[in-house]
Length: 233
Ligand code: URA
Image (cartoon, rainbow, N blue to C red):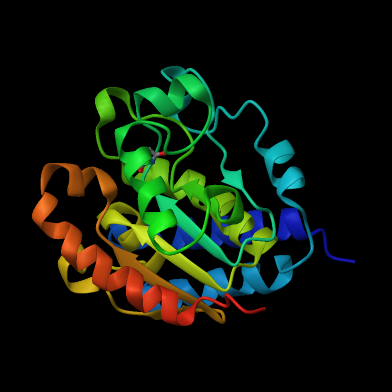
C-alpha cells in the first residue's frame, strides 16, 4: 500500500525540481502550468479522503521548512468545519493572526466574517485557511519559495476537507492555487474546476478595506457563490 503522505511529498519534489531545472536553463522539459497541474493532480487523487486535518497538522509539526519559521510567533494552520462545503483561502497570517494562532481575526477577518454572514453562513460552518501558515515579516507578500514549501500542506487540507466550493481571497491565493499569473481583476467572479471542486477568486478583504468601492464587485461574486452553494443538502 502506498504511503499517501510520502507519495505527495515525492510528487511535490518532482514538481519543484522540474521548475528549478527550467529556471536554471535546462531545455526540453515541459513545465507549463497545465503540466504542473497534472502532476499536482496525481498527488491529490492519492490523498483524496485518505487523511484527516489532524494528520496534516501533526505532520506540519513545529514547521521549520522555510525561513518564515524564524520570525513567526505561532503557526496559523486553519480553522472551521472539517467537513465544510465552502472553504476560504487567504494569503497568510498578519500580526493579529500570528499572535492568536487563528486565521482572519484582525480587521480583514472581521470583514470576512461579515461576508460569510451576508451569504447566510457562519464562520464555524466554513473552513478558513491560508496559502502560507506563518506570518511574513512586516506583512510582506509571501515569496515563491515559501509558497512552494507550504502549498503541499494546503493541498492536503483541501483533500481532507473536500469542500464543494473554494473562494480564493486575493491575488496571492488565486495565483498560487490556480497556478497562473493572471491578475485578480481578471480572475475574480469566474469559476475554475480543480478536480471537481468549483473554485472562485475574489478580492481580498484587506483590499476592500483600502478600496471600499470594490465591495460591490465582491457582493456580485458572492451572489454567484451562493447560487452554487448546497444550502438544501
Ligand atoms: N490576511 C490573510 O490573507 N489571512 C489571514 O489569516 C489574515 C489576513
